[in-house]
Length: 340
Image 1 (cartoon, rainbow, N blue to C red):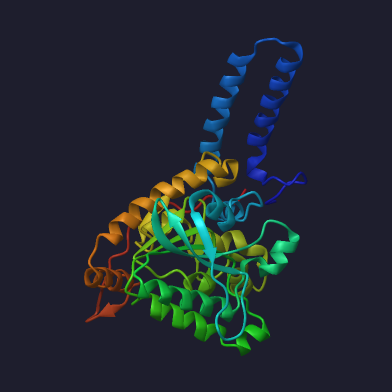
Image 2: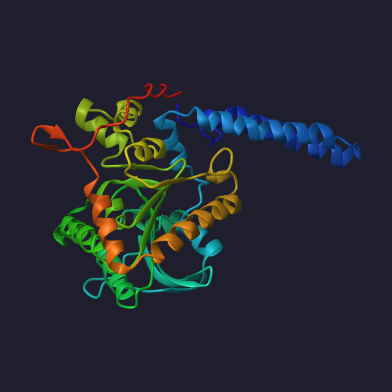
């Protein structure tokens, strides 16, 4: 089972139980005025160690559950905590304004940036309005129009990826979903301004790629990035979504896997137990990584920036040339542990 009846994920059980004991001790100490600070500090230290142990041994499927955790920080949290003077820019100048993708100008550590991010929503009303983070073609066209504006004034672009995938409905297909994503991939590969992309939760298929091409690609420690969801892969291969844990292990979609294959450039650490345990700490870790990577790419001359971006994209994947592979895959690691 991925989730218990109380709402926490099954592998979080020992952590939640220890946290409850800490709360009980704190409550007892407050009501009786007995000094239990020593015991409480010991339990808190043990809780941090336990969180690290649990997360370090998660299977690919369990990391996906963590990436989908209801308490995990969303783009709106990073927007509120890391950026100043945000000014949202609306509309694709053709059809409408897709709330699943945010675009806007802001200040990041005193530097003007263009923000593009998937929005999922914090409550039911917001989630429905944002279509649970699954964007329509007008969302991707909006993103591209604003990125071209950033290119005009050489404003760096920061993208926050968190989507189960682009919306596959009839209306979206009629309005050119695939073409909109393909156009974004093409144009982002040659925009003459620095681009840093960060996967903060789910990185699903073309929906993620539509705002995911840049000079640096970062991933949160417990995010995932994949051509298809484990449930979708399982349904295709085994005609049932019941084999999603097996599919997750095969897809090699975790941050550790993708860094090993040189798809991403950096793994952004999360607080012990996952980003949902402390939104403030998660924001600080993201800020540090973004600031470092942004400073590096902004120092590069435009032509060198584009050359490196082209080389980065060309390195992805394996193909045969004159009978020899262009890239020697890294050695196989031990198989992912079975989902608990």
